[in-house]
Image 1 (cartoon, rainbow, N blue to C red):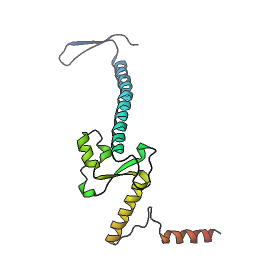
Image 2: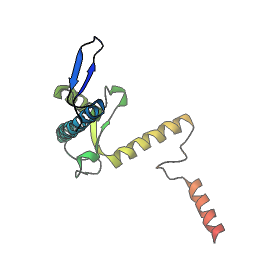
Image 3: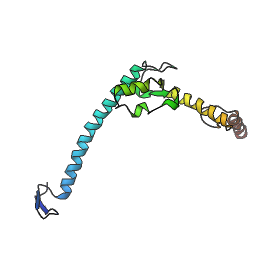
Image 4: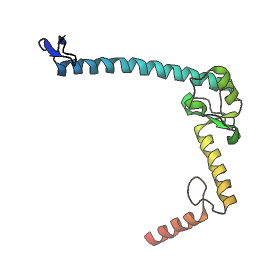
Length: 155
């Protein structure tokens, strides 16, 4: 522990501290770190309970495959992206009537089903534009042919 420290403020008044500047800064840093854990823990609990309420409101399980084991794996899929006002998972601190109105526009999907849903939508858009996707979750015969040729050359 350091000895008493004194300095002068910009107005010229003396300022007395029980710690030197370095020790005082370390003290403040340790104090904020100790508070950070508690605040983060409380925020995570609050977010979990809000998401659980939203998931329960939409039925509690994936509408495509029936998955219901982990709340973190559940996502909110807007049926019509044009009517989307905000992303539900990022706005869980909003008032319940506001969340409920947005949830009525959504389906509850597990993460895998949600990604497959968006992959299908992306493929449909690309096909409509005349530029089909050549990578991602859709299998393509070109890549399978290349893999077969590579295996034959290696043998």
